[in-house]
Structures are given as C-alpha cells and as structure tokens.
Length: 113
Image (tube, rainbow, N blue to C red; front, top):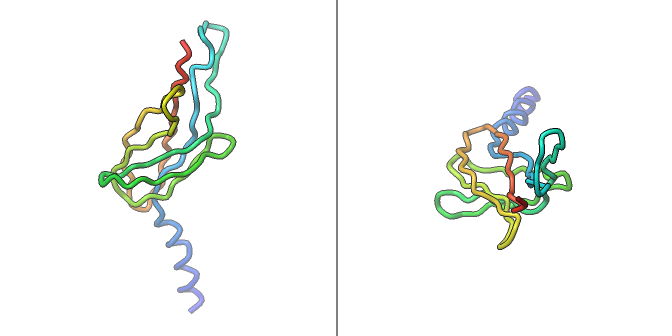
C-alpha cells in the first residue's frame, strides 16, 4: 500500500503545466555603441496570461524579474503589464502543453532611443 501512495505524489507534480521566465527591460542607454555594452535591466511588475476565452491569469515577478504561472493546456497571450507609458510590453503568443512547463522570457521596451 505504501508503494501506491508513494507513486501518486510525484506523478501529480509531473502533471503540472504552465510557463515561467524572466522579464527584462531595454534598451537602457540612449545610444548603444560597439565596445560599450548596454545590457537590458531587470524588470519587476505583473505578468498576465490571457486564454482564448478572455480569462486572465496574473502573477508578480520576484525582485530578479522571474515569474511562474500554472496554466491549463491551451493557447495564451502573455504580457508584462506596464501601464499606459513607457516601458511598453508586447503580447507573446504561447501554447501550453499537457504536463509540461516551458520558458517564456519577456522583454519590455523602455522607449529610450
């Protein structure tokens, strides 16, 4: 009996599906030049996944810009929610598979040129 109970736990955990990733913001310098790197910076805030029926699933990033959302299998538009002004997030289409998590890194445009 203990063997059956032990097998149920890991299988249930393996059946989770969803997305995870990091959100970054860039560009971070007005003029990027060769030899003078201007890497994107960490962005913190809310990330939303909207399914085909308009249901919204939301989470917040941690202080390193990482996020994770458990989602049912299906199609979603994923967005770093930035509000009305810069930076601007761009929706990313994602298809979530059964019993799988996938990395979806997002970026927001700071508007710096």
